[in-house]
Image (cartoon, rainbow, N blue to C red; front, side, top):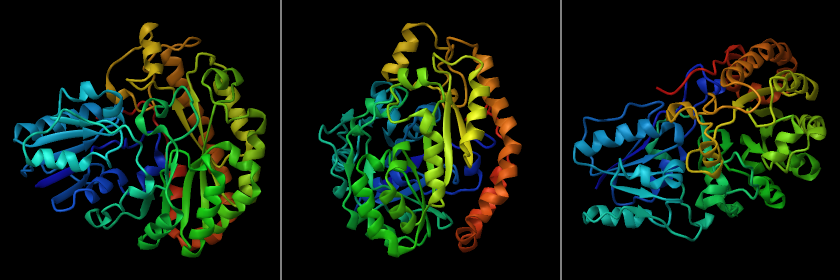
Amino acid sequence: MKILLIKPRWFIHGGVYRYLEEVKFTPLHIAIIAALSEGHNVTLVDNDREEIPYDQDFDLVGITVTTFTSEKAYGIAERFRSRGAKVVLGGVHASLLPDECLQHADAVVVGEAEHVWKDVLNDAENNSLKRKYYHPRPVDMNDVPFPRRDLLSEDYWVATVQATRGCPNKCRFCYLPNVPWRTHRKRDVDLVYEELKRLKQKIVFFVDDNMFADQDYVIRLCEKIAPLKKVWSIQAPSNIAYNDRLLAAMKKAGCFHVQIGFQTVNPDSLRSANIRQNKIENYRFVIRQLHKYRMLVLGFFMFGFDNDDKGVFEVTESAIKEIDLDDICLYILTPYPGTQFYETFRKEGRLLTKDRASYGWANAVFVPKLMSPEELEKGVQQTYERLHSYFKAKAPLKILGRLPVFMRHPHLLRLVIKALFRRVDVSKQLR
């Protein structure tokens, strides 16, 4: 069969992901599906970087769907179905709202694809596609094939790699507690090493939900991959700071950048959102520890919890400066359709829009309890504006402190400098 696998466009130029104006990541998910499609003619399209070939005929089209790309994905699906192709939707949104997705597709993969994709291919060839494909057993990470990177554009310079899946935390705002792959699983360190060894890219981003659910595993992995001399970034929980052996292993293995979801400086919001891993009084210690091991720290903060009033912006800004972060990403609380969190807002009559383009964590899609939606969006925008010059002023010392890494990878230095001068507009949406 002739198969097309698509990651719809999701990056918003000028939006909150300002570093991604320059970074080029490999779309790992569709490359793994391609590896599961042996014996077929497969084309991959990352719509952030490539045009979708609507003028070509395909037997099967697979589209990975998130909430805020869902309407765009439905439009893509309908165009290919009108040309006679069978369309299969998968990803987070398809797992949360499979019945909605089935209104726009011939089949839906609910959960992980590794167990069921061969069935999808066989049924598509025999013109007998089922409506839903789902396997109740979580995928063994050692069964996940190496992605078909040979089908991707050659100019990707940040490789994405996944060593684990799932997360044991149960934060109320997160989609993970509501999807089938929430169980934490680990890939053998030798397999991760082998995949990293094959990469031509020297810079890697681990896309794991929470690799650090087993810190001893991360130490073993770091010890294994250190000889490869890769440099890498990862998202991590704040509790990694209490394990010096772990941090030393990460540094030796090439970790230069850590993204941490501090989420809030409001203790009532931490409790109500069930963010048990964070202790506000320890935020400064966490960053100090990571800085000791020469790692840059990007902090994520979220606004719009029921306990947040207009004063939360000023308090958060002061805290960000006090704890000495290297940069920040500010979000607006956004309930994913299909989660219990969303249902709570719906039952309370607080949802403002069903426009999925607004569900990218940058727009107020509900009525907060202690401020207006307009005040929420304005507060985030103004906090970004006030912190813009603060982080620019800090940049020279931060760069000098990590000069060896930037000298080995000058495009990283260009990325950091360009991002620091780029302003954020939270009103931007995917269109």
